[in-house]
Image (cartoon, rainbow, N blue to C red):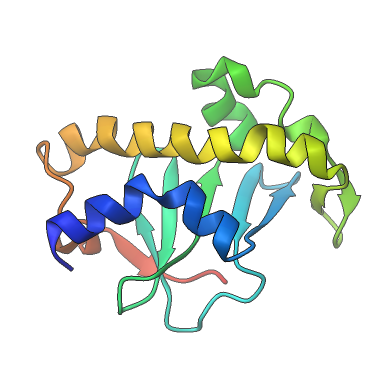
Length: 147
């Protein structure tokens, strides 16, 4: 994927999530936050794009979600404005996974969350990719999809 195309994709992360109706989920046992399409493609790779975030990306370059490991213990610690975010996950999906019951609470956080992830990606690109957001370089950090 061309650098300009990947950069544009990162810049439009919140809009893509809104358009594709990504669902926010939080695994309380793992402290993982998932914001993804309902069904992620089997071909999607989990691509680490910052210290705290990874994207689910198809081989064609389509983003289908974001994963933040250690949401409460790491991301929130570095982004104080999200202190109450994980507390919004009250609707049980399965044994340890929850989603946000209150749509207004979800909207309050999610668009801004996308912008925070975008900022983190650019900040960490300084270290991971020596300042460049290059899709091919980031693919070196890709791992098989968990979704």
